[in-house]
Amino acid sequence: MEVSERFCVFMKKVKKPLVLKTAIKTSLVVGILLNVSNQGHEIFAGTGTHIDSILLNFIIPFCVSAYSGAKTIDESSP
Image 1 (cartoon, rainbow, N blue to C red):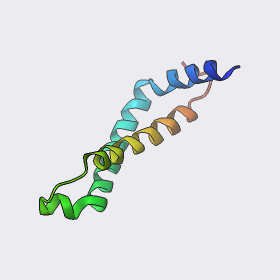
Image 2: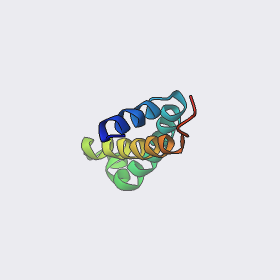
Image 3: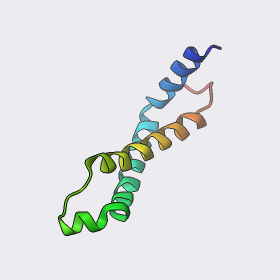
């Protein structure tokens, strides 16, 4: 199986509702915790935050969770 075909199969797994639902839940919880720990002082002081850091604190956990969820799906599952 060539790389592009493997990538397409992998993306089909990532788009499964259970994988997406779990990844979204995980990214919300982890993203909030990361934002509070990394920028809590700025958020609570009202001095301004960095939107790129806030977004990355949600995007990275989403990608990690979606990747792990897709990797655990067996090739033969629907």
